[in-house]
Image (cartoon, rainbow, N blue to C red; front, side, top):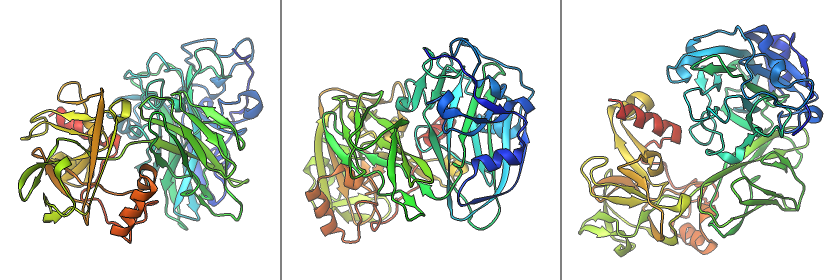
Length: 525
């Protein structure tokens, strides 16, 4: 347990002062307004000394569903109550927040509206979300949440279901990004909080843009939640882009997370933190999920598996000495068919393991197309590598089909067009799972196959339309060098580092939270 000590709070700070605190290099603040209880916002300082780990930077702003100064207390031990609720007269039932909460009533909103002019098309924002809803209500309807809208469009996190709320980051979901404060390890009255996270948003350079940044209670006005935004973090100078990696349960792999990051200065980018822990070359951080991450002298990271097959996400901070950004690393698998799956060809349905390069496969868009490349690998069918079983007729008229969790299935429905602007969309099998007809099946080993054509294609497997292999940024991370050389010889324009040079996806692909929205909507009809 840590001793309680108060941050320095300026609860009289104006909206413009708060905006100028959080906006940094490459962005000019034009004007700002604040909506909410006057006690629910503040500029804080001395975060590094007073509340290390609980604040995203030494200085920043707090937006709260209660009173901002109640984030810490002044005496005794930190986190003395498990149900901190302070009075707030912020707006209830705000239409924007209600809509973002899925139509659920919201309370005690506190938000900052800023008009700004950026100098480039991408901007980031670093923050910590802390809530008294943890851990008791992290899976309940009381999903107090952070909302950010740029030019009227909501900005999502790049992992999980995209939400900044207790349901998306907690002890069970994206757990490496969650800090449990039940034992008062951090100097805050909140029972749980996130590591410093980031939102990456697209903006229009050289002209006025708008952003709304705020927080609200959901379903009731009890139990405080807080949004802490780092000073100078709304910037365009350093952009840390998400990396996708694959580490087998007992594998050690080196990844270059800085390779796809952008830096507008002449200074060198370096990794300064791994999952919120300050590091120098040679340091190793053990994630909550058990894997280890070591910072190497050349700025790369070494990922060391812990024997468990599972998905995991962690963060790192990239800095050029003046500005910084937080990036994410998502350990993921690539889409593929399970041995035994039958693919519709000019010769009828053929088991995928019997197909050969040059065989003609019937595609939805281009008729019969020759296979250009086939890849395969065998792994333990455990955790995130366990296959997904789609039961017979679960998605229409088809036989039972087994695929990898990332393999995308075509869904055709008018609701998809209403929600996403296209009648046909691709959804990863892992995002279709339920408790009966589409399930993950761990146990034993499994052999996965990848089929690649001249273009991304939709093929029929066991009567269900699914995708062929689509190279992307993950390609160079999932295959050995000899396989990459083979792919480049077949597709000279392909860049295995970025996935460019091959062609677009055959249909729009839904992110996890979009898939969940579509499935929930279809199930409710």
